[in-house]
Image (tube, rainbow, N blue to C red; front, side, top):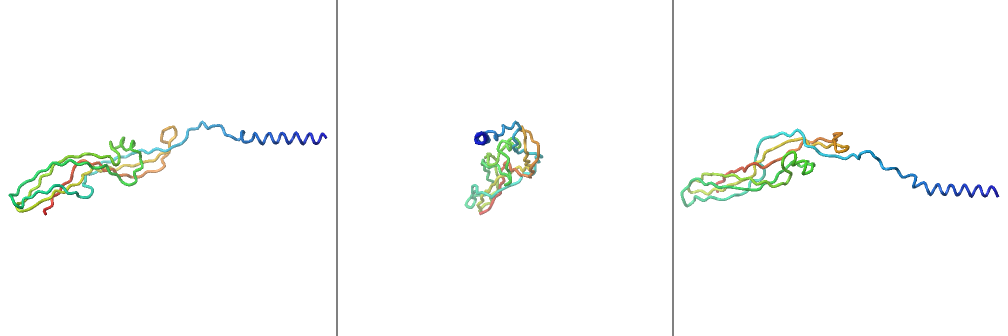
Length: 171
């Protein structure tokens, strides 16, 4: 009888411990900061200004039936900020570094004067002229918001519209 009572008590203790085990296995919340990642733009270098993109058709000037001369036209067009394909930094990081973000539209105004000879027609063609910037896009692991470890560094290129590139074509 004592043996049966001892076995019953042991079984009760084992069962109670097995029910408590999942509750005891829960870890206390960690007080260590959670690592995250941030991008930074570093080593910004201003390059040359260059025409970029396909030529678009502007107005046509006709001197085929009248006297030739100069034709002047004011232009105002919107061009988008462009970048190399590998840009991963957020809009906020890009705006802080360059003053603009990829895809943002910038309006540029300029004028063009062409000479149209008597008996000819001329068409103005235009495209954006961009200030080129190169920089390092750096991915950092952070703790408490401060960069602690560099994970990746890539060269990026940003193209900021600053003017309009013109050419005339006789037709």
